[in-house]
Amino acid sequence: MAVTGLKQSERAGPVDTADGSSDRRRRVRRSPDLATKRRASLRDRLRRDRALLLLAVPGVLVVLLFHYVPLLGNVIAFKDYQPYLGILEAPWVGLENFAIIFNGDPYFLNALTNTLVISLVQILFVFPVPIAMALLLNSLLGERIKRVVQSILYLPHFMSWVIVVAIFQHMLGNAGLYNTWARHHDLFTVSIIGEPSLFIPLITSQIIWKDAGWGTIIFLAAISRVDLELYESVAVDGGGRLRQLWHVTLPAIRGVIILLLILRLGDALTVGFEQIFLQQGAVGLEASEVLDTYVYNRGIVGGNWGASAAVGLVKGLIGTALVLGANKVAHIFGERGVYSSKD
Image (cartoon, rainbow, N blue to C red; front, side, top):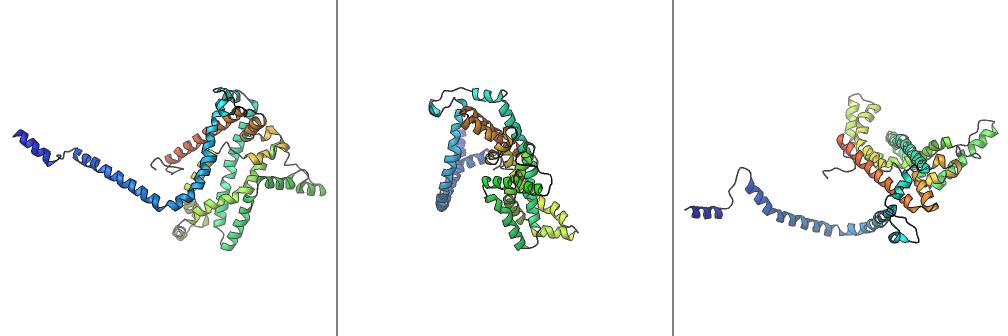
């Protein structure tokens, strides 16, 4: 009887228990079917969007060839690399290149200090400018006036740094328009272009003039998504433009501001090679040397490729750490950040 009852229970299937083990077994049996459906769904999506995927292939190849493949070249940071030897034949030196840089190299310390100061100034004084400009443009009543102002603000972005630096030199140089006019009227003259103490304010003003207008595009797009009923609600409660700005507009674009700030922190040690390199001759290396120009002068000009690669590798690692840290802080304060661990 016991054997017969056992066989009947086996034929009857698994017995439900309080801990739900039978349900788990049924879910395990269904999981292959679910995985098959997911694979089929992925194939269907790929087949459906194959035209768009083909259009994306050139861009993906460009990113792979010019952004990911060159990462393999960072291996020369651990080698005594010389162009005539090649990467594979160059002898390994371990951390010697890093020791050369970080063991009190005065040129590196000067470049690092200038880079940090310029980066801090740009975050504090350049980053908020597009936000303020977007808020001002959004408050313009006439759409035609807004389009004209936007076009004027965007135009400098399409100029190369060579043109921008030349414009500032002709305006503020020793023989520029301002000094020529000041001498003609017996006024005080100053060569802003060649004054080391004014180098950081100079490049900061150049960045604002060139790129602040272009940076307003993202913030204007975020502002345009704000529900107009929110402004009407604040107006009904007696709130003016300032209260609408503070309680509606800024909270609506807060996520975008945090996202762009995190990305900016990732480039904290990159402050613009072309702009600074074009103006180093007027102010000297002590005031204008940054990490990007240090890598150029030490690696390409000086021939110390390994040390330059070591600086570039350290820059990349620090930038990655800053992005990850800032993103974690954003999550702590309830913001999405660049990515979410739940994605």
